[in-house]
Length: 446
Image (cartoon, rainbow, N blue to C red):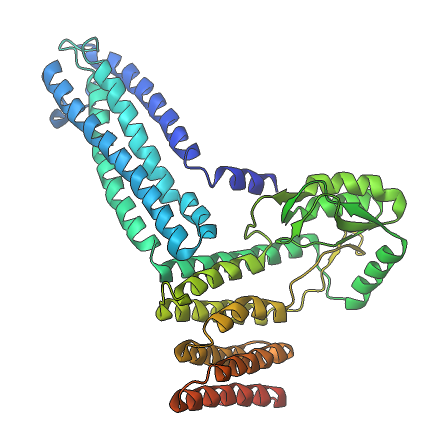
């Protein structure tokens, strides 16, 4: 958890990596200046190729001045391009996606490399007149500055390519869904590590005990519940011999003084309150860590903006529906979450709140269904993808698919589409119903 928290605090900052690269640049300059002392010795080693050697201080100063000016201009260009990218992302894709662009390692290391190149060139330029060597040119430092400056120009090309591809809506949607897949995988690994139980009766017995004999623990600050340190919660629960039920899940907003958990017995309230303060991360923003709904909503937000009258980008809206369907296919094949986590003694020590699949379907499709009810192309794509979902997910989730298909049909018919569109919509709805019926009887239609 401390590693995640460090990455969460450092990740969305454009100054951490560039400043670290600047420190590396200063250290590199110090090393090259030490090597200059070896080069100036007539009997010393020769490590600089002929084409990287400046004959006179004037030549070296001219080259380094030009490189320094070019790198400073490029650094300003990269910063301004980054700001423009964030502005476009805010207006077209949604403000919650800005964090993704700020965290992009290519952007951060591009800024850091350019800043480092500027520093090395400036320091080397300042040391020419008094530098090592009979001609007053620090050979190793000069050669390093030229090579680093040339490398920076290659970095600019990579950065421009990265910006050009990263702001495309399909690429953004695919990357957000990839984050969702990572979230699901990380949750599975966490639960397997700490011990997850599928015994519904044991989980309900723990919950009943906590509600009957327990006491509520209150939130100490306002904000979104971002993550739970499950290892710490379970470890303290075992040592202090108590059971804990979380009343809020990651992604929900909590208010100071609002119940956030319940512990039993009441004598363990002090120990439980202390571990809740340390192991429950509350912050100003939602994160994808342990929050499946948030990743779904990021894709939904892109789709809603695309389907808005101001943008009216039907194709991007349908792309979002397709990727949401792919994510729900994976979620719909996973076993049901009971929310019960086991201690090392095999007893249920922690019960956390889960997001059922029917809620995930609503989170993915409800707002897009409402926004696209008057667009037959979007309605038809929704019903086609619901047919795909009905073929892929576990049978126990078919009711949620059927209910969503009925809602899509009802919303579309209210908008009174033309006869041909209405026929296509009804035919797609019938196909969803047929797949659901066949799945329930044990056969899948072709």
